[in-house]
Length: 102
Image (cartoon, rainbow, N blue to C red; front, top):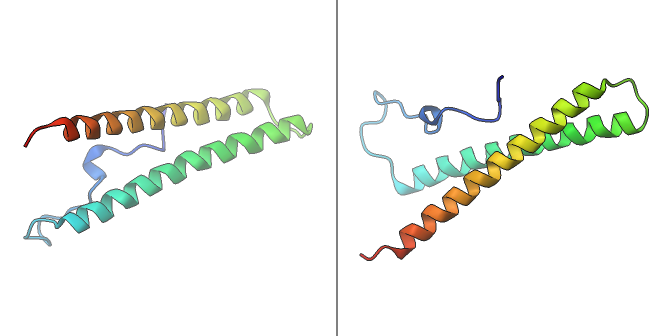
């Protein structure tokens, strides 16, 4: 089963060691993280839209297989649940960091 909405962690920051000799600035890392986050949310949104379109076609009586509708619905559900769990872990990590004494 291929989940197209997720990428390996090694590909998150496209760093080429040969071209960048200095460490990344916080601004560059923030910008890169923001773009990855935005792309991921857009992919989740796309799966939700596909699911809605397939369900609408089924309701309107168009020639759509029921199992295809159910598959797209489950894909949308799984990606949404995974996104929410990732969000919860990020919030938990942030709260833990804020509790640390410096």
